[in-house]
Length: 256
Ligand SMILES: C[S@@+](CC[C@H](N)C(=O)[O-])C[C@H]1O[C@@H](n2cnc3c(N)ncnc32)[C@H](O)[C@@H]1O
Image (cartoon, rainbow, N blue to C red; front, side):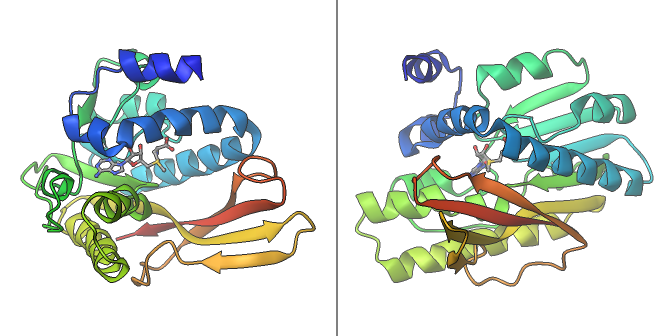
C-alpha cells in the first residue's frame, strides 16, 4: 500500500486528466495485480509478444512501429522490436517509472503519453462527445500499428466517471462505450501500414467448483473483427478478487 502511494506521488505523468479521472491509480493497481498474478499473466504476456512478432513479420518495411496501450510494456517484445525497426513509438495515457526505466535502455524507443480517444478532456468536464482520433495518421513511416489490450478498456473509466460525476444514465453510458470502441476501430483502419489488434473477446466467471457463473461481452455488443488466433488469460485467479469466483478472458488477435 505504501509502495502504491509512493508510486502515485512520484509519478511524472503530465496529463492532468489521467490523474483526475483515475487512470494513474488504475495503472498502479494493475502493476501490483500483475505482480500477484505473475504466473497466469506471464503466459498471457508471452502470447501477446509472440503475436506482435508475427505481426512484425507481416510489415514489409520496418521504419516505425506504433504500439497503442503500451502500459507496463510487459506484453511487448521490446528488445526485438527495437532491433528490427528504426523507431519504436509506445503510447499510453500513463507510464509508470518502471516502464520509463525499461524504455530508457533503448535509443530508438520513445514513450508518448497521449489520450488515444482524443475525447477525454471533454468527457472529464461532463461532455459525452467522441471523435475519431487523428494522431499519427499523417506519419507515412508507420509500417506497423499494434493496439494492445486497449480497445475494451477505453470505455470503462470514462463511462464510470460520467455516471458518478455527471448523472449520466446507463443508456447514455452504453452509447458512449460503444462509440469509443467503434471510433478506435475506425481509427486503426485509417493507417496505411499493417495493423494488429490484440484484445479480449469474452470474459467468463467461474465459481470455486469450476462451474460457469457468468459470461460477458467486453465489446459492448460491437462486432469485433475476425480472430485469427486466441488464448485464455486467467485475469482474476481464485482469491484475487473473491475467494469464491475466478475469471478467465479469451484474448484474440486480428489483422485489419
Ligand atoms: C489492460 S491495460 C494494457 C496495458 C499493457 N498492454 C499491459 O498489459 O500492461 C490498458 C491500458 O490502456 C491504457 N488506456 C486506457 N485508456 C486510454 C486512453 N484513452 N488513451 C491511452 N491509453 C489508454 C491504460 O492506461 C492501460 O495502460
